[in-house]
Image (tube, rainbow, N blue to C red):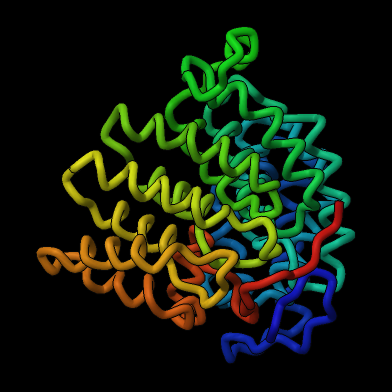
Length: 348
């Protein structure tokens, strides 16, 4: 069905499997056993929780439909206090809840769910000295980003910008750079991926973040997920966000020109990111000048290695494929959801 933020969805298609309420209650019972009050022996079920859920549902995790995972999410939200039990509880809770709530919208009750989980943000990571908890924290916000309001996305981005700019010239104020706490390499990568999924950010914020990331990419061998983040920040076709928050075409063209000028060994991730930046939409407000897009097309065709991205560059309909939407989102989307690019509505 057509998922639009704030719209009433039609009944979702499923994997073809039928789950009875007893199976669902059994799965919710496994969650309560792992995260509810109890002694250490009961909580020892935490490491095998996902296996227990698969067994209770008799269904692989990748086949869990939207209606099911939202019921599991409700149980996890009830047990939010379990984050304080241990670092392992916090990491597992964030991971499973983010998986069950992705992409943050698509169910009539998601607006309420997102209001509830937003209360977590001021609390921050409970076990902040544990790397895994900090990583899961940002993975969680990336997964549910589509349900965050524009002001919430902007709030997170403004808090993170000094840390991303620490030691970089993209943020001109020395005092602002010093105010930012440096992030570890793995945490910084997850932060970039989360911000890249914030499609409701103002365009000037996306410009600032993209230039900051470009500066980083110019100085070192980039990881595939960093190229993914750049392509999402500057992509021509959003997954859920409003069209007026798409990065301006002239800025995207400048990014492309800068990257092509580096004469770096071409990776698959780099080619895919460039195709997102230059992608044709048929909308003059978002599209690059034809000469710029043709230059990029020639670059992708050179040598034949990346010709498959020419179709992404030139055909807007490619976004309709499930594989393409999953790659843009950063992982598979739940069964029963289909994303329609365009203005999905926005709340301040």
